Amino acid sequence: MALEVLLFRSLFRNTRAELQDGPRLIYAENKFLWLTGLAFHWSLLIVLVRHLRFFLLPVPGLLYTLERYDGFFQVVEPTLYVTDVVILAALLYLLGRRLWDPQIRYFSLLADYFALFLLLGLVISGILMRYFVKVDLVNVKQLTLGLASFSPSVPRTASPLFFVHLTLLSVLAAYFPFSKLMHMGGVFLSPTRNLANNSRMKRHVNPWNYPVKVHTYQEWEDEFREKMRAAGLPLERE
Image 1: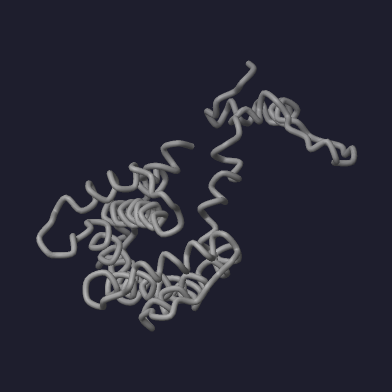
Image 2: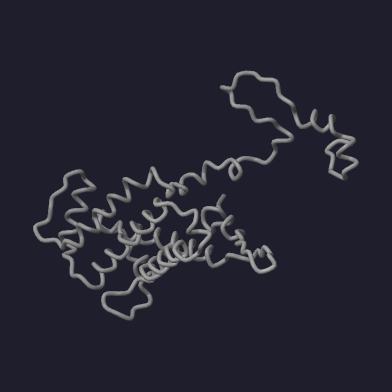
């Protein structure tokens, strides 16, 4: 489970299929998708943690340390955060993949594009505020601290772009629990990942199920033992 949550184990093992001349179905690695997904999710986590400085007073020293390492590649003023570049590039790749890959475009739904454009709008508006459009951070922090303490106060001077950014964030927060983005929580509820693979040795029964006639694996094996032996299939009991 830790490998799945932290390193996307199943996506790392994922392959892509392509129909070529012949016709021949060719399977190949899809590690770039895994790397892009991993970069996007980790960058998003770091960006969210960095934004905690707007909601906390005083700001913990750990957040300053995270900002210093995130902005180690200082080539412009203000400091260029690596995660800002990575998350934007990852989202553009994921969007381009849906637009230009015929197979993925065929089964893509409006909800898939909506989530990508919503995240892109949120990221681009945040990048514009940090590097191109001047925003009064004192007023921004005053508003965010008011929201965190349930006593909001509208700042007297704030960039319209900030309210665009805040609106997109609010839409994402409201949309998140009812969308495909909830795979973040669903991975912990996946029986194939968080339950022991011992269904042949132990039968798992819900306590609220009413009694039913079952056909166990041992009974099934006894019924088809000779046919399984003739076919060369492994038997648990000889």
